[in-house]
Image (cartoon, rainbow, N blue to C red; front, side, top):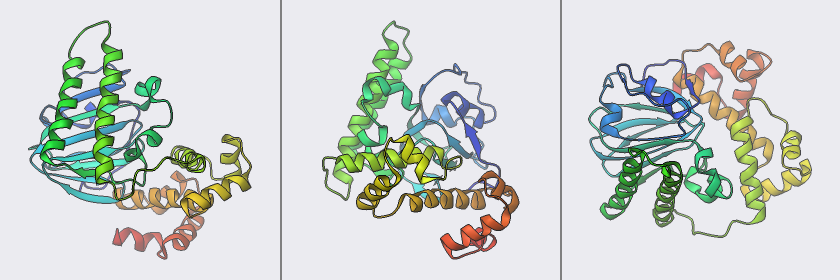
Length: 302
């Protein structure tokens, strides 16, 4: 994958254009949705550099129709092939190599863009956005054609200037997600079931942890955010997810540690500071307990 460097933090879809030197495409900084073809997106990309590791505060979906592509999703490295559909939820570290020969479609969008018609949490309505879901789906030809049409409809509307443009794009992006959900259900290893109240609460907790784990480590603070007691939160999360709230917080910290150790050249002290540990010793102790390895050893084997 890419040479080690800092993980970029991207706040809006328009910031993606700056990742590729020579890309002259200009988008309004306030744009909450940017669709494109992969060939347009990557036409200025240096195949030897690819797209550097970044954490995006918005979602990315793309489908490859021709070519191959090596990507990093969190700590996983995957090789993509034609008709692979990729979902990158917000706050997931993503990097891409060898994508200059790819053809297909992609879209960047902020969750707020479809919030008016979402009616709940994104990962609750569309489980493929869950952090623990499978984010790469190998489509059949028929499934691929369905997704391609949804992308083309979005691109066509995005290129128009009409008073109803934003409303229509809201609905077309939502339709794309519905199409993906329909396909995802047939590929999912678990049967589709109604989500219980306890599971909804657990998903809300996980969503809060994903967004706040660097600043908030206390289970009781998450309980306050959910207007429940810490004990009730612990009981619900254990019964639905099979592990304690503290364990989930530690898992997010461990994953972030692995990403920083494997994707950057930052020192252990710098990583400890970024992850808000008191010092390097506390960070090293935490990693040893969670993984069985010291940070320096873990960095070598990742």
